[in-house]
Amino acid sequence: MAKASARHILVETEAQCADLKAQIEGGADFADLAKQHSKCPSGGQGGDLGEFGPGMMVPEFDTVVFSAPVNQVQGPVKTQFGYHLLEVTSRTD
Image 1 (cartoon, rainbow, N blue to C red):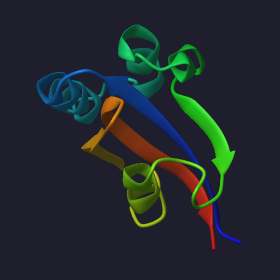
Image 2: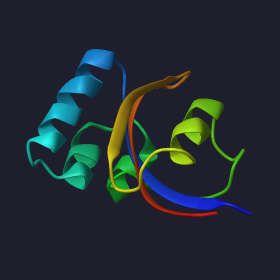
Image 3: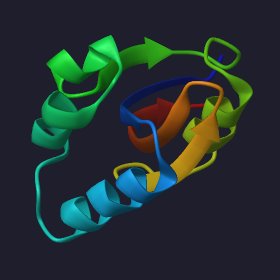
Image 4: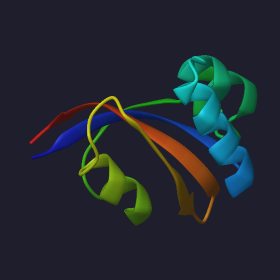
């Protein structure tokens, strides 16, 4: 069964999400920004969600996590929780 590890940053607005993505693309550290800005408890761990399989996260998450390139920040991704930046850190098929 496929498994993936990922980290994310959860914020309330698409604009804030896009701003954080620009900061990361400019060299800011993903984990530091997660600790400062993420509304998810995982922010305290730099946004790390650990390892999970398909169907364990909301569908919008699964779609990105199990299709996006590894180690490339994706987003903004909208879910019922808000807007996410996602980075797949590893994946096995």
